[in-house]
Amino acid sequence: MNNERTYRPEWVPEDEAKEFATTYVKKNDESSASSSGRKRFVKRKERSVAEYVEGVLNNDRTILAQAITLVESNAAKHMEIAQQILNELLPHVGKSIRIGITGVPGAGKSTFIEAFGKFLCENGHRVAVLAVDPSSSITGGSILGDKTRMENLSRDPRAFIRPSPSGGTLGGVHRKTRETMLLCEAAGYDVILIETVGVGQSEFVVRSMVDFFMLLALTGAGDELQGMKKGIMELTDAVIINKADGDNKPKALAAKEEYNQFLHYLRPATPGWETKAYTCSALLGEGIPEIWQVIEKFVKTTKKSGVFEMRRRNQLKDWIYSMIKDYLESSFFSHPQIKEKLPMIENNVISGTLSVTKAVQELLQIYENKKASE
Image 1 (cartoon, rainbow, N blue to C red):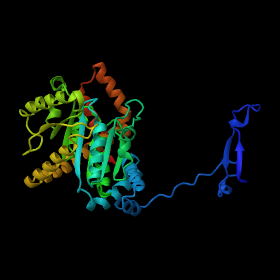
Image 2 (cartoon, rainbow, N blue to C red):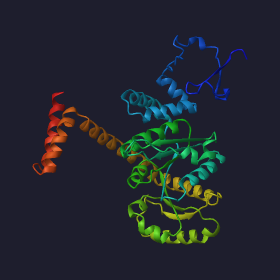
Image 3 (spheres, helix red, strand yellow):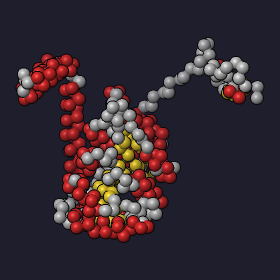
Image 4 (cartoon, helix red, strand yellow):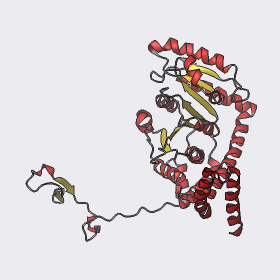
């Protein structure tokens, strides 16, 4: 090919063999390169709100992913565009079944979600998996490994997997995951699976945005129950003992009975619904259809009683108050005079020259006075 050229990296010694060279094929539009020899990168044209809305409604996965990126961004410009998109899409949301999934370490959450998601896709559903990924409190980075752990499901065109960093704050999870969920609903995904970070308080946040909440557990329920917080158990609509296969199956059945005895004395998470334990093997796919039947029965029962719609209305109210709290906290700590005075007031409290209550009153007074003058 006459447009094929060979280059040697600058770090290769001149007397080395040519296998260090790289082949470069000149593109037709290379004439647009700058005179310095560097290629110019053309900035991608920004999409309009209407283009985002149309793309999401048509389930254009690229545009859906870009819209979710806007939702996850903390930049003011991106947040404004994201809110415009969401407002346009509101008539098309709320038609899915929202399922929260949490579990003890080693319970096989990703394996379960992949098996469960594949089953749903094969039975005519479209599934979105929102995996809330833990962010490092030091670097802010996150693992985002769910796509690699759910390799088969991620290749299914009827499924959409979005691992999202938590940003280290539960408030971030609350807003970003909720809004991502709404975008997926508008794109036509009728089952939304939300996997929690699994660090205690996040379960309460996810419970506040889903219809059905399940806990994945392991065998050896007696030991597990000792370390299980009663509060987490009271949030669940079903306990799933995974890995009920091979030699472990009898243990799983025994664990199921122990959990059911424990759950009998707890107040149900959902009025009119009895929380029970079930067994499954995500590895073999056993018990997965039965779990979906339990969820379908739950939806039918709660819709008939009115609990389903009542929960959704209460969740929207909770979201309003949560957003107000997040905004006020952000506004307070980002205030220039607060940032200036806070270190000195902290030192006065630590040194014992100022009480905590008095310190808080001083800071609030600074904030309120400045706000009143703006």
